[in-house]
Every structure is written in C-alpha cells, then in structure tokens.
Length: 92
Image 1 (tube, rainbow, N blue to C red):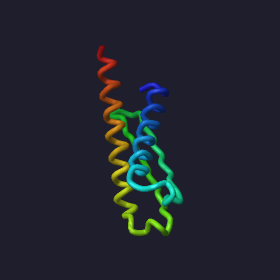
Image 2: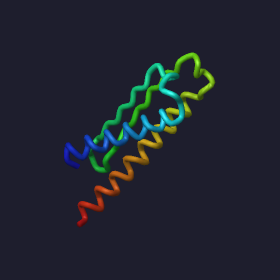
Image 3: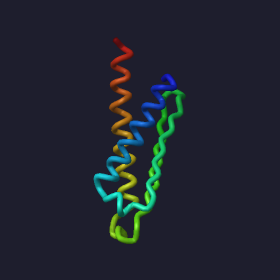
Image 4: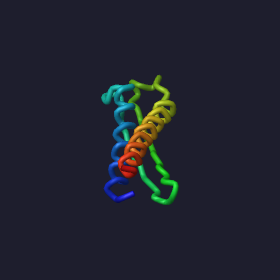
C-alpha cells in the first residue's frame, strides 16, 4: 500500500467511527471523543482502531463501552470496503 492509501484508509475508518457515535448520541452529551486508526503495512495489513469516549453526566445511562465497540466495528467495516475496492482497482 502507498502512503496515500494508508492515510485514506485511516481517515475513512476514523470518520466511520465518528459518524456512528454521533448518530447514536448528541454531540452535546459528549465531553471527549478521540478516535485514532493506525495501519501496520506488514502482510497481512493490520488496522488498529481506538475509540475513547467520555460522556457528560447527562448521558450516564448510555453504555459507553458498547458504543465504542460498535464504532470500532463500523470503522472496520468501512476499512474492509475500502480495501476490497482497492483490490479490485489493482487487478485491472
């Protein structure tokens, strides 16, 4: 993978996770939302996604761990889609 492709993959994964969180809970109830994605280019390519969420006291009833886990799943789904598209283009 090129550096641009790695950067694009990380950006897409981070954005997918962020969108998922913001679909589930209002940004007004979020104190902190940090999302990072890193790629290890060794074969096979390995993606690591970290979602750190801290909610305000108004949102204490939300299961933060479940929300973070769902966001990570969304990030991986987005990354997988991107990698499949990338593989299709390189075969042509």
